[in-house]
Length: 203
Ligand code: SF4
Image (cartoon, rainbow, N blue to C red):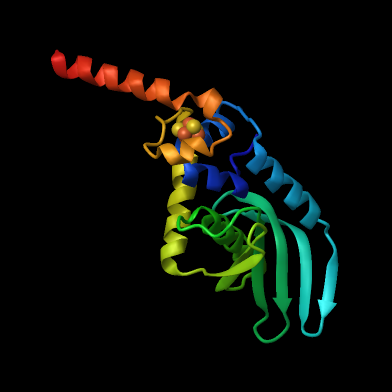
């Protein structure tokens, strides 16, 4: 088995490193309404169809790979505008709505890193189309987002290498929306961790 990371796994790490480890180290998975809707949406958009409208070509369900970052994945939609240079514009479909956190933008940026390597081109921006609000958010693929994305790749790779599941996130709101809450038992783990901490300071 190679050590390539699935681009879609990066959002798990960005959301909660423990969630990433449960899925990708311990091979646990549980579907809830959010994950089921996301899966169905991607099945609908990954048609592989190509379409040309004027100077714009639309390609769907494109396979991606990066040797440099050891990533693989799929891009929902790539808009290619002919010109010199050719302009590549990745589009990712998400079931929810725009978020303040970078989870979705990290995934898009990782797709762009693959695309840049495959096409020897610069990809300066892309977009995320949110199904719940039927709106497209343009994303600048700037240095800050690239740094966050590379840090996410490195963090995820470290968890895979160590094969150790990190503690639960402190953000209980994320746990409430997490499909793995029953498997993860974050409350019990947090209590256990606090008890061990108290024992240590009593010694
Ligand atoms: S339940 Fe909370 S701590 Fe556990 S994997 Fe989900 S988000 Fe992370």
